[in-house]
Length: 89
Image (cartoon, rainbow, N blue to C red; front, side, top):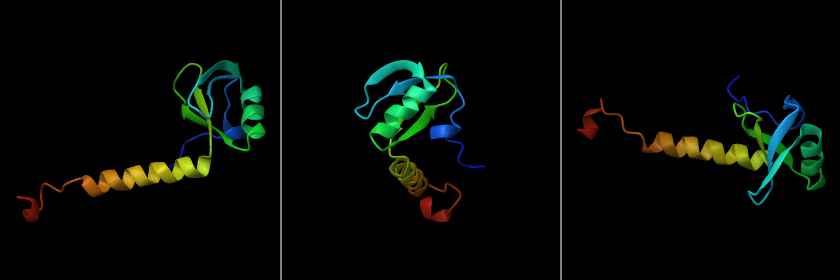
């Protein structure tokens, strides 16, 4: 599975460090409360740092987040030079 980002009900931690829409840190709250907060504004709860203790989750539009990640990867690939090619010597 290439995409391992947990969103909404796939987040298994009991508590998460929540970041709101504006990027402000709300604090450490139970995952259920974070899910309710995300649902209240009509967005998704996305786990942005799963290895932290507790995991860091952000309220955002997951579709837009995924699109921006794909766009960044495409840009990085486009700017990468193939040093073995005679064109770049």
